[in-house]
Image: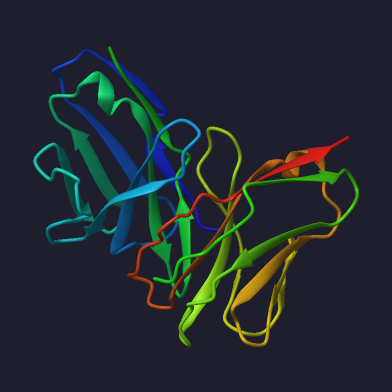
Length: 114
Length: 111
């Protein structure tokens, strides 16, 4: 099946710094990718929809200036957590649509802010 | 997208069939039923999806009731590696539509 990768798989950063997470569709082109966040023992929460060549669409309550999304190509979307704080520590997961109806998820990125 | 309700947790003996129910009573006519699972600290894995007919693939079978208000995911011979959280999601067929995850069912396969 289709493969989606994320980089890095885990990252530790200091409070106040920014960190970028990459999401790539390896064997298909994805005009739309999605970013989720998952806290321990909780379900995935959709953060935003990333559209190639246009601005991302954010879910209610998600700060677009804090979580910067760039979808510059059909195989790459990036999520930048700006001025990270300990409460931003979470498991971040991306997904990409593979036509016609399937959506494939990346392996996730574990962010720890100290 | 329609909401779904699933039992919080279930146990299944290894080698037996695991039947995971899902209620989606407000599903609309052109919404599909998708099943994903998530093993601890990994991304969700696609299992199967369907519209109104029963579906089967190498991983599982999906049984959708005639009124489409509920469905059951069947893992025919559960193994220890099937221990995971299983999510039932409904969404429109348009590939641009996002998934909204519920709480899922935590399945534990017991040796």
